[in-house]
Image (cartoon, rainbow, N blue to C red; front, side, top):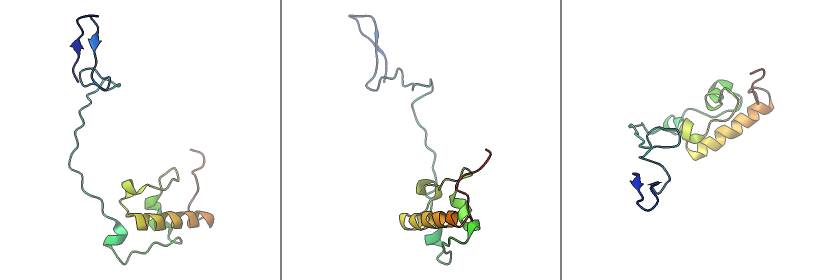
Length: 106
């Protein structure tokens, strides 16, 4: 994405995505560097003795943010099967007031 001068109008011509010199809208470089990240493993698949239980808020607190939202599986590393079970357990534990729906006073 380089700027080329258009001879007929004298205005710079932008690249196909509208950026100039590879810069994004915030002024930084649009080149993204990705380091090696370890693949997340579902902790319930790795440890077969670990059971998802809605009566265990100590286990479920790792899958709830400080704002009270359920952590998505791309962040938590759960497989789809266990993420569904975790979400169901969090909803059940909220119903019986073991986990909060939201934080208060923030």
